[in-house]
Image 1: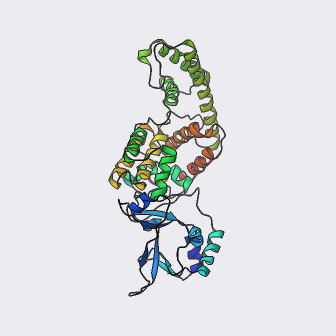
Image 2 (image 1 turned 180 degrees about the horizontal axis):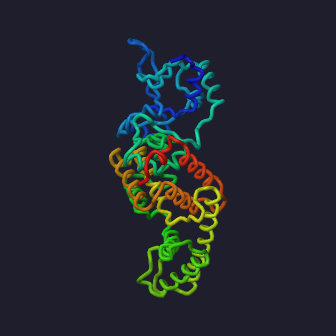
Image 3 (image 1 turned 135 degrees about the vertical axis):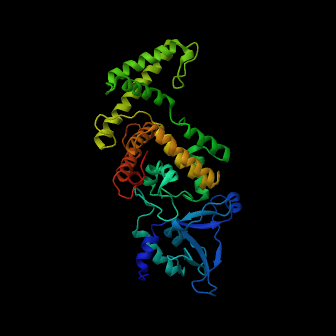
Length: 385
């Protein structure tokens, strides 16, 4: 409104920009970008040709067709298709603008892109219009907020486009080996069932939780180790009563049992060292411990619903249902956002971090601190229970 176009381009240089393309084109030529020019000028009757890009808050709800690909101002400055096509940003909206895109103009875009940080990281971002801020859907979305903050994605964008249709599909293929709707459905249900993370972790943590419940206090590590060994040996002697976490078959050799015990003892060591670090960093209160790591599955289930929608393996109603389910399960199994967070981070660290306390841990610690302190955080504005 004040005509500060330098500031406008600074903001634009930090934004994800989305352009629509036919789904058939995206499916037949993955990685190939199809630009569709639109005759849409800034004044009635104008005939200038523009490529229309939308920012995240202006995207429509995902539908089967068309789909969107994601770009950024720096990339557009380097790879603009034709000089006679202008750039239209959010046309028809209060923040809409139209720009020529000659080589000289694109040099200006490049200068703005070079001095701004893109992509953004480690930031709480909220969709204030068009995204749920209260209620079951918002609660379920907030269960995935740790990863949203780490990636600086909108935590409450239910109509998820993410990194664009092709990249969302690539993400699911590379990280989850999901290539179709059926694969997404299996992964989504496994996460909601709390069965994606290691059942052995759950078994070992469950022994300590049972002891804490029975004795009403802090469980000493040596006592936990001793009881875990006793339980494994007892289950090995009675295969029919073995928990899912300890896959005892008949016959089981003594060496197999001892190997299982050794693995449990190493895991207990890892968990206690992580928890000590968590307490030092404020992820856990003094004397606190993690009861289960199912939060890691529930948090990822909240995100998986959105990833599936971005990849068009489900529709908006299915994704929303899964998000609400993830939130409901989280409320049943945990007592607060803080408890949920510590359990989520422990699961992530046990899977990825290898006690390096590197980015796999540092990103989550930073996200936890933002979510537990920023006044706009859903963890402060949405009651956990």
